[in-house]
Length: 434
Ligand code: NAD
Image (cartoon, rainbow, N blue to C red; front, side, top):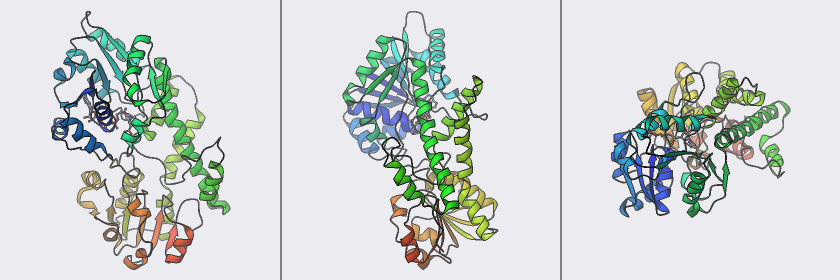
């Protein structure tokens, strides 16, 4: 089976490598020539556990190929998976420019029948429009079917999620094409749900919006804990033990970020506007999250007044652990505010420092270890629950910092430990230790 994957980002690369791993012949195509030449040598340009090893193995075994030539990418392809970015546009809607450019490119280079599978997250109605667009471009003797196959992998566990997906969604109005794509996924042995094309598109947005709702809901409960004196960790545990609720996504914190939840909730909101439907819960979820991202900064300001000239360490930069992705990461918003405050900032992250350096350059000090980041600091903000941070010896904060004042946006430490360590510890939805 000949598969082409268009776009070698977090989704496209993982998809291509995993398809090669189960034995298909895969060509990954990207317009980023630098990325393609790096990938061709077996080096993975993104941090994703296990990906580089699997990439090298499949390159060596001759099943995986990389190209930046769209003609070469299309020649043999029976299935073309499109996994280009659909970022947030200025008005909050999904920007489909990359997708449309990719489709135009494929359309211009197809020389035989193929199934085009859209993995990118796209608003309801887009797949139908792509089908029409392809019909308009390709010659009449070539037949293309369009299938929606939204992706649910999580960055940081992309490979694991691909081989253990809860479900594989295949949406198409062409039964034959749906069967062919389902067959392609058979080696993964995961449950498949086949739907019409519009339902598949909405499953993706509704799923992300629901998970974002759980996060915003527990964050609201956490804020209420601070008023009432309850402890959010106990409250969430007690709620999550109810199987109807479930314990996942009940971790209170400094708000969701990343390349999906923020943009997908906003794109869904835009879609509801288009249909003149007022999706009240969704609007609140977005609003609560942007307020939550401010929580620690506001608490610090309230406690310290100005942060001007203070030595501030930010621990954790990626939007979550085990990834180098900083898109919409709460840490980025915090750093921007700290720069405006004219604080003296050091940062630490096991994977995302390079990307943060591209953004902020010499305005920050980039530490290789937690020790170096917090040395001489007046304040520490914890923004990502990397093991290097959660397992850090609390006793070292008073030893290394000028004043052991910690604002923890991920509730990394127990209150008893914090008290024993003699630190001033402000977390989310729990009483302050000072
Ligand atoms: P990404 O930004 O990491 O990668 C996109 C890639 O597409 C880049 O390498 C870019 O160079 C390439 N590209 C852009 N235009 C192209 C073109 N015309 N032809 C070929 N390549 C092109 O994006 P991502 O995070 O992998 O996300 C891809 C899609 O999957 C998005 O719609 C996203 O919402 C969705 N998604 C992402 C995740 C995730 O965790 N990242 C999870 C589920 C779904």
